Image (cartoon, rainbow, N blue to C red; front, side):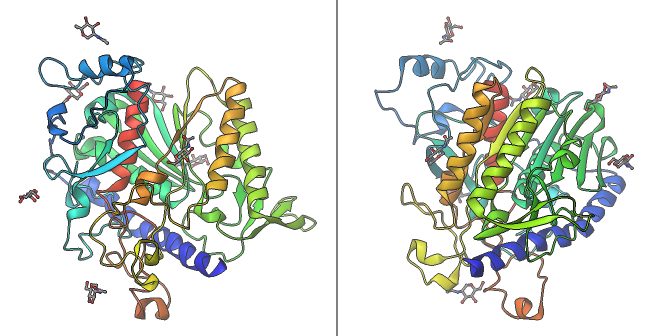
Length: 434
Ligand SMILES: *[C@@H]1O[C@H](CO)[C@@H](O)[C@H](O)[C@H]1NC(C)=O
Ligand SMILES: *[C@@H]1O[C@H](CO)[C@@H](O)[C@H](O)[C@H]1NC(C)=O
Ligand SMILES: *[C@@H]1O[C@H](CO)[C@@H](O)[C@H](O)[C@H]1NC(C)=O
Ligand SMILES: *[C@@H]1O[C@H](CO)[C@@H](O)[C@H](O)[C@H]1NC(C)=O
Ligand SMILES: *[C@@H]1O[C@H](CO)[C@@H](O)[C@H](O)[C@H]1NC(C)=O
Ligand SMILES: *[C@@H]1O[C@H](CO)[C@@H](O)[C@H](O)[C@H]1NC(C)=O
Ligand SMILES: *[C@@H]1O[C@H](CO)[C@@H](O)[C@H](O)[C@H]1NC(C)=O
């Protein structure tokens, strides 16, 4: 298990390490870009584009009626009708990937300068681009098309904050890419301040932020760029220092998973600065539970139940062992060009016990009147062994790592455009339709 960990974590660090430079570069590009080409790929995903659509008779009458009205007379989805519960009765997370090179990708890699070198797969030589062309097709309904203008309108005067680790950052970059093509260069900006990265759409007074807190609470890995630390220490009760940066958010999207993948963590009672703190090794599940308790207590006390929408993105699967789908284990996700087609495929790195703990926390919050929606992306992402950067990313790290790119391939993060765009489409669906 620790062997696996040492592979997962360096990659996380790597993405963060090289990201600073690319973000600064991106900032400069954003500032100096005079004329951009704006992709207006607002082609609708009409119902008739979905030959795979499940037409089972046992769909609830309620859903069928809603579905009939999903496409407005002019063929445009009526995405503005919020709160209509159009998707109630449909499990958005249960479905399959359908090859669709007409509607996907939703943007081009070259058109989004905010994609950092850890996940810019085309830029780093990936030739097979099939991974960009898959649409997630729930069994019982169709996802709406992500509409960047509608999203920006919804975020007018608001703040959307992603809080978590580099996978959540992956999703944040995707969200920025999904909306940024609609904004002229002079009207958008990117700033970094401490652990907070802020994308701003000036005209809308909207900000889309990422806050680095890989273990949610205070830890010795809290530096956005320098968290290359082999032993995890957490202050399981201390979240305030992070949380004050997002108390006022209108939409919060949390995640925290991969940094927990080790048998135990050191829990600190006391502060990092003082010398009389008490350290204790605590089993991973137990410490995860403690932190989720701190997190949910904080939400319970500080979150404005009327104003703030809450989401928790479930664990992002890794594809570090190819024997899971019948290849030699050492091959990892290298050279994979197709999703896994076996229904319910579940990799060994996704720990359902941790998902249960998140669900339990969220169920308890519900009894206190706080609704947290789980973006249950694990199963749908499990299928996508083809969608990781593998060797197509900025190479970094130790000599040994540089000498063995295949062995140290990144099968953890996701190429953009790609799978996180679908996570954000699911988020979008919840924001507009629930
Ligand atoms: C569908 O649209 C029609 C016409 O606008 C309306 O009469 C009907 O109530 C709608 N059905 C549902 C389920 O919303
Ligand atoms: C899209 O896919 C179809 C069917 O696989 C193929 O014939 C066509 O060439 C593809 N088009 C592009 C632009 O990739
Ligand atoms: C996207 O949303 C905007 C603003 O709500 C709307 O005017 C436009 O028609 C939508 N585009 C599509 C293709 O649905
Ligand atoms: C801009 O948005 C922020 C929230 O992100 C809000 O506090 C502020 O009042 C808004 N400013 C204007 C001028 O609307
Ligand atoms: C950075 O964040 C701190 C709060 O953590 C704030 O006091 C400071 O003004 C911010 N700096 C900039 C340049 O925004
Ligand atoms: C994987 O692809 C690389 C080139 O990208 C090639 O050198 C290598 O032989 C391939 N490995 C397998 C097992 O197909
Ligand atoms: C998320 O999906 C998994 C498998 O697809 C399922 O076992 C789990 O119960 C789901 N969790 C929630 C909260 O829906």
